[in-house]
Length: 413
Image (cartoon, rainbow, N blue to C red; front, top):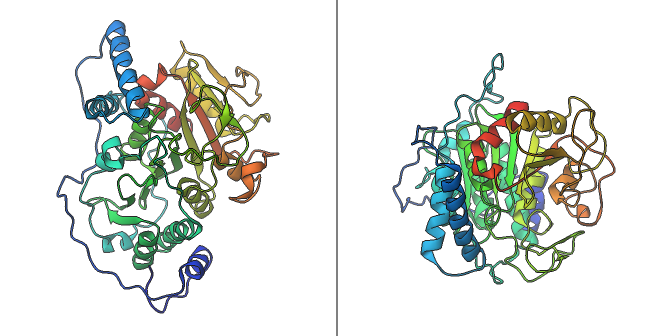
């Protein structure tokens, strides 16, 4: 949807062409859920459990997570996973900034256009929770968006960048979204209908760190959703994009390069519902648009792996310079986690080189590394690194303390 007498350009013009021209008028919608809209902040908690207690808790949560991922309709198991995610956010770590490092500076003027949005009827934690997202059933529950919806979401984000609330809201509705403002914050939230499988997007328009955090697999790589929420709520990154579906929620193949053993016993092609490896998702469309609108921002792609420690890459196997983000982040994680294996896929003196899940088939990485446009990257590897993309694989042990890992990464950037 879009207003009359509009003269958009770029993605807006493409969406208008696909959607059939101008003619939308909006009607205000009243919030249905008057819950708090305050963003969570760091709070003190009880002492951490012993190693044995933590191991027992992890086993219980992992068992519950497996039940949820398998598509079992078990509310008790889902509650266990949600409580674990929330508990992981409560680990106190102290200030982010090391000595001599200034806090995040405003990089834009306050976006008065967000005051034109309806206030959200929920908080950030609700929007970015398993219960709030309500991913579709893993057994074929994902329905891929069409070209019109992808163009509409891109147009909505572009309109927001231009400060046009009416266009942003109208195009968002055509993509299956509602756009609202989080409380008194200069934050706009794109929230789809629960269960739709579409990603949730939060965009900060005032003081922000020039970082986009992407969480492509929040429902089977535990801890990454908590990291994304923490980075946005407490560390002021500019953008957070979280997938709304399990990566295995479609039987159809994406048609993109690479294989995985996550959804099947044997390695098989990536599914259409895997947003890191499917160019037909709104997650990928949002990344393509937002990365273009903020060409100097670094894009983080947060993942979980079965190996220990961390594997950090820029989405390629090419050597990296000393000041490259991949080098700085690898060094920072090595210092923060001295007892864990911290490796990189990009050769550099002093770093441990070990190619473990390097993200070379990650579509957002290929796009940022100039392998092609948003569609061409499905089958084209990057032949250079732009140093705008960071692919971070994390073992289960280090994901138990998601704030610690996230803060180490952001310090380095």
